[in-house]
Length: 146
Ligand SMILES: [Fe+2]
Ligand SMILES: [Fe+2]
Image (tube, rainbow, N blue to C red; front, side, top):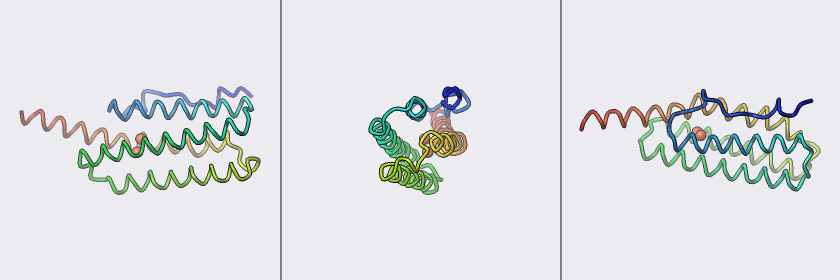
């Protein structure tokens, strides 16, 4: 099987057009894609564990930054959005705990593709796009006032 078919690539339909959000999303995609390739290449358990930790840390940082942006711009759906972030953080923490306690019980490659990638794509397109739209509408309204 060609492992490249499992990698994820950034595509323009994922752009929220908010530079701060998009640059972190692109990095999330790069890290996830690298990890998927590493799995497919059969990298060591220790190396994969480290990369997984790094991806989780980056995800937590991204969520914190995105939540701060929502507060800054009075995003009306902040609480619901934060809950989605918190639930996903729990999913990832559970995955890492399971992988570290018994790495043979987790097919990391397919889990990353089926859970992480699917969640990211859906969340970015459906939820993060709304934050960016909200920020844009406020900026446009402020411009009109001037
Ligand atoms: Fe988000
Ligand atoms: Fe996001």
